[in-house]
Length: 235
Length: 235
Image 1: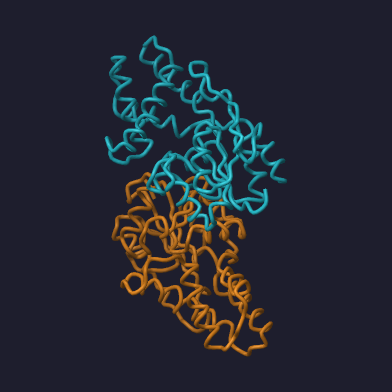
Image 2 (image 1 turned 90 degrees about the vertical axis):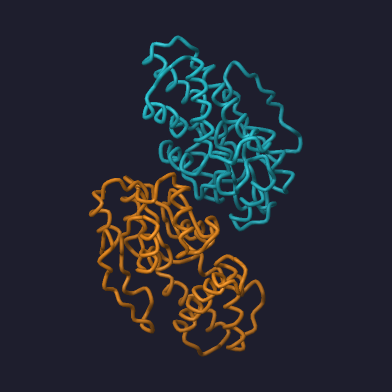
């Protein structure tokens, strides 16, 4: 892929397995409070209604711009109220920070290290900066740079988010490749002129939300994991 | 130093030895063009009139906000014109990027690695993001995060630069410690509520600009180098 100098990575789902990681902490929390509820379903709703849904509300102007931590906390309050769980502030904050402690997919740290030998590697996530920094320290993710919607001032898939990331990396957009497990993210990046690598993560969403993994023919690369991506990029 | 969670570092002069690194590239360039001129003095003016002076012009509204690379390039053009050197665009750009290839002080990579075992370590520089990323890759600087005036939207010592950095690191200001070889930088950080560590670098400025290294009594820590800083912070 000639001319590519930097790779920007979606993080939740692409680099880390958010669902297993968060579900495990939710399950422990529910058990502690003696509540019978499905931890996987709790986690799915936290992600879909809280994070994805929250960002939609921000984009539509119904909520002010806020961090992923704040969106998570807002939804966590709703979920705990629905289940009638009363927890003290510190415990709620601690559970909310489960999103800072997500386990990488098994190929992520080593694959990133290989890719880094040849390219600048950066996050480009809707998660806030300190969340991404804590996650990298927790999971051993060797980023050169941590870029986020909190820095670019717009959530993906707004074009400004991708354009500003390329600018901060000192590259025209066609020298930056977006890497993601989510086709919409890649198609939005491509519309700003970025190259695209699709790395499907079939286990990301869990059993409740089957995902169509057939790659869009427009993607520059389709890879089985980060080692395969590294091999295809001659690292 | 109880309660400190993140360290933000000034970079030029504090982490890397800009003067020796750039002078060596300038000397090679001058030799190639058969020009008799003092590479150290060229470098001093590039730094003082180009970078520091350029940022002052930006602060005073006489120049629009721009990156360190752009300020360096502007001054390089002036210096080359004064010396009557004609070089092609690619060669000028390559010399301008000498600022991406600065050698760390000998204690910087190892000291940062120690500090990182206990604290989040981030740049907080007026240099642009890609410059800082390239410099980190060149010198093996293990940053958790690359923050810069290009991200905060204001050059140091504007208070907004420090405040926004703390916000992006997810900390109140008193949980962040600014580390610098420059007293003005630290005093400005302290005025926003940050903690301060002074690490004087007596060889930074070269022989033409003697610097008063007597520490301001307000600093929380004065350290001989990054290993001493790590020891004082129990790393």
